[in-house]
Image 1 (tube, rainbow, N blue to C red):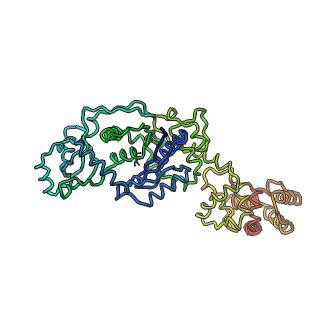
Image 2 (cartoon, helix red, strand yellow):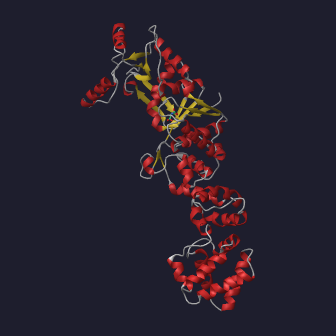
Image 3 (cartoon, helix red, strand yellow):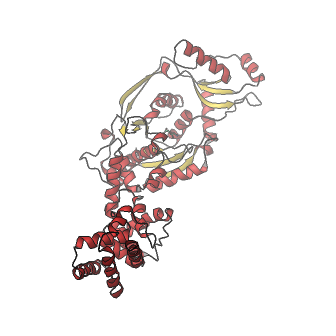
Length: 487
Ligand code: GLU
């Protein structure tokens, strides 16, 4: 039987990093097994689901390179099937209508809390008489449909990550709600309202012939309930794999408080899709040969659940940064430039990828090896954004030293005689001025850095000069520096 797995996000927010990591593991397993990877949008919560979140989720998955073979399927379009299956449970006597009001359920929970008992539904409406039902209906109470869970049941499965897992029926919180707001039909027949997650997920996974349910560990407690539903509906139970949670550096579940939750947040911070996808493969899995840099396709070749950890996966920013820098450093300038452009645009630098190629490519080639995150290009590109610079205190100090104004004047004069076309010309010009003035080369270099870059730190000076020259900024900056050196 061919492997079929799925990612089943709820569109109640942007693509979450945890969902993306689950998608990565599903994708790796599907590709390793030559199986299918499906996308199912779990949008039964009509109030919280939004189409812009669905868009964001799909774009995020595509951006990461997680292509799906079937779908997207939308649960909101499959209600007829769920209702049919709920009816089947009712007809088999495995589910029933329960009529407690929210206040009554609250009172039940409070009484349990007072007795120091775990909250659970006490199954009190399991055997209502026809007269009781009639009375509740006449009162206008809204029923829910509850699926019977026997306390003495033991539910076991072999989890591909966690090994043998077993649960007792009595720990599942009593008969579970599988659908909301079910009104009795005109002829007294059941009309099923909104079906709930634990039920629809079972119907869909069975209907879509899912062989392996791979999802986050936070769903472990749902799995025994779902297994009981598979059995009740006479459906084959899939294999389960519950992947470890992603933890922050303090060992708590990664959350909004850590400042990043969605894949878009990481994109904005300047991580590339390849690096983030690569890093996510390592969040709970390791390659047999401890290799750490690979494409998703390469990771898929080696992927197996035997090497997925049970323990939570700590999010390691230093490693993500390292992986990102490896990808950035290996990119040719032609490939990197379009990736930097959005950051420069957002910074308002006004660079034009078409018109400015002659200096944008050398700029990209120069700064590429020092980037950790794409966003770092903003600080480095800043030197090249405007004709003039603000001089830092250190730069002013340098320019104020004896002989600096004359030296910069000589550079400017030489530049007006022979414009520089490349790094060799610039070096030649520096040597020429150094010799003519009989000063130390270091003085010229430091002064030029102060004059051209406005600061004593920054990217390679000679390469920067060539770029500034192509932009037509270098003479202006030299003039500005000379004026400053000669108040
Ligand atoms: N919609 C659920 C979620 O986003 C899916 C869980 C599952 O994979 O069964 O967590």
